[in-house]
Length: 188
Image (cartoon, rainbow, N blue to C red; front, side, top):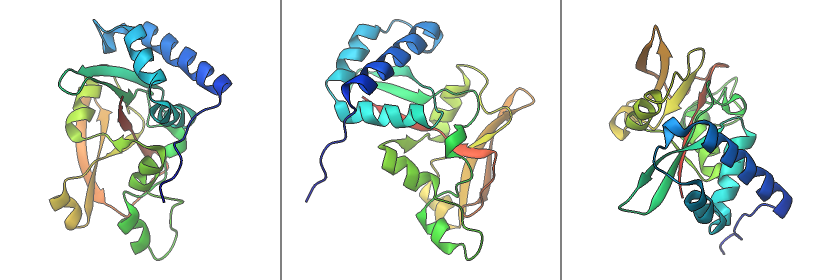
């Protein structure tokens, strides 16, 4: 049995669209040559994606359009909050890592929470793309989608910006820190 599609009530939908539009207009450097009207039409045609954007917004992600994929006719949203989203921190990397912890388990994992929200973690390449748009994670860090061969060995990767450089590091996938969260991507 499939679950019913998730949709926002009309008042919440309208408030979110207004927030996204204001952010879009304020940060034109992230999406030059794209039209808000075209983005809004896509969003209004897909209530479940709008629900996911609301989850990104409500957890502190400040989602914004960062590109358009002509091949798939999709707009690409990243979390663009200056620091790793505040309500998505203190998670280990994935469910396997969460289950492996015997003591002091975090509330959840980044991969689990992203799936619940209907988004994916940024890849290393996407994180580098985000960092071209501004300075992100100067005080925090963000888990990134980890290659299978690295994960198989027990590790996971994360990124941050320090000393005006972007760094990609590794940690045990079961680790978690108050200053480490995750950033998501959503294609609409």
